[in-house]
Length: 505
Ligand code: SAH
Image 1 (cartoon, rainbow, N blue to C red):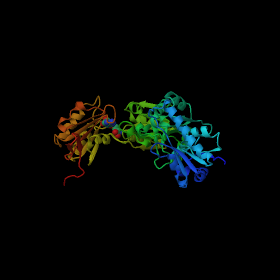
Image 2 (image 1 turned 60 degrees about the vertical axis):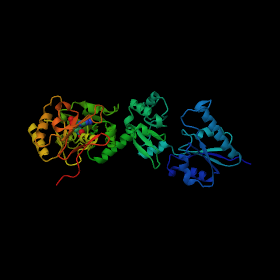
Image 3 (image 1 turned 135 degrees about the vertical axis):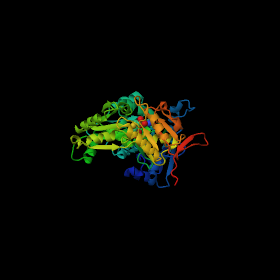
Image 4 (image 1 turned 135 degrees about the horizontal axis):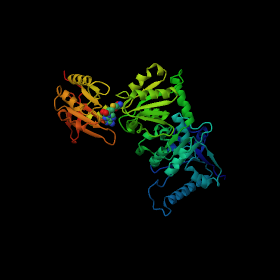
C-alpha cells in the first residue's frame, strides 16, 4: 500500500479568510489534521482552519511539553523538545505508513519561524511532502497598518526579538524597514534597541494581527507587561512614509506646496498622557521647535532637527517655525499640556496671520492640560463650573489679574490657577490668597499639584487660609474650591476633593 502524503500547510496569521484556497482545499481533504498547541489545548492554527475542517477527521494535537520553565530532562529544555518532536514525528509517521494523508497546520507560513520545520526535518525525506505557503504575520501587519513595507531598492530585515540587544540595535540602525518577531518577554530589550538605533518613534506594535483581538499602536506607548508572544514590531518603509505624508499634507493644502506647522500638546508629563495623534505628528516632523525642557521629553531622532529655545520670546519662536515651514519643513512646535492653554498655539496663530506667513498651513493638536491631571489626582474638584486663569503678570497687568480673581471669586467659580509663581515672581500667590479670602471661607479646599505625572510629583491639599507661597513654584498648579467644594476623608483614610454637580437654588 502506498504511504500517505505529508502537507505542511500555512494557515495565515489569524483571519480564516487569509487561509489560501489551496490550504483550505487540503485541510478539507486530509484524513489527519495535526497542529501544535499548548497544554490547554487551544491552537491559533486550528482556529484559522476551523471553517475548512469536515468534522470527521482525525485530529492529532501535538502538545508542547513546557514552554520556558525548567525541566528535569537530562538534556535540559532542548532535550525535552527533541524528544517531543521525535515522538510527534513518530505519531504522524504511523498515519503516513497506514496510507493516510496528513496536513500539519502552521500559523502564518510554515517556513517562517514555524514549528512545522522540526517535523519537516524528520519526515520530508521519508514521505512525499509538500509545503503550502501562507500569509505571514509580517505581511498582515503591514496591511493592517496600511503602511508599505519596502519599495524600490529598500532593504527589509527580519529579526527575532531573542537576538542580543546590541545586535538588534545594529541591525535596526542599518536597515530601511524591519519586522521584529517573537516579542513577548523580549519586548523591553527590543524597545531599548530601537531607541538606541534611533527608530523607536517609527516603530509600530501589532498584536494578534488580523484576528478579532488585533491591537495596533505606536510601539513606544505599549506597556511591556501587556505584550503576548503573538505580537510583532514593524518598521515600515521610510520612503513610502515620506511620500504618503507628503501626499497627506498636499491633500490638506493643495495650493501652497509649503511645509506646515503643527502645534502639539505633550500633556503635563509622561508617555501615558501623550496622545497617539501627537505622537504621529512628532514622528512625521522634520523639525521640532520649543522650550528646551519640553523638547527633551521627545525621544531623539537623528533624522530630525531640534531647535530648543528658552520659554520667553514666543513670537520669535513662532516666526522661526513659520519660516522653516515656509521653506518646506514639517515643523512640530511643542507645548506642555494643551497647546491652547497659556502656550504656543495662540502665539503661532497670531504670527501666522501676518501677511508674510498667511499661506503657511497651521494645525493645532490638543493635549491633556495640567488642570485635568491635577484634578484627577484628588478626585473631581473641577466637577462644576470653573475658571482658568494665569497668575503671570508678564503678559498682562496685575490690575487685570486682581479684578479677574475678584470676579471669579464673587461668581463662586472654582479656580484653576496656572503660572502661580516663578523664581522672579514670588509675591503673587500671597496677594491672590488675600484677595480670594475676601470672598471665600478660610477653610475652602485648595489643591497644589506640583510636577504631576513627573518624577517630582507632589500633591498637597490644604485650607485657603493656610496657602503659603513657599509651597508653590513654577511647576505647580493651584486649584481653589468654590463654596460647594468638599474635602472628605473616605473609609480607606484617603482624602478626596470634589465639587458636586448640583448648585443650591
Ligand atoms: N499648556 C500647559 C500650561 C502651560 S503654563 C497646559 O495645558 O498644562 C505652565 C503652567 O502649567 C505651570 O506653571 C503650572 O502651573 C502648570 N503645569 C504644567 N505642567 C504641570 C504639571 N505636570 N504639574 C503641575 N502643573 C503643571
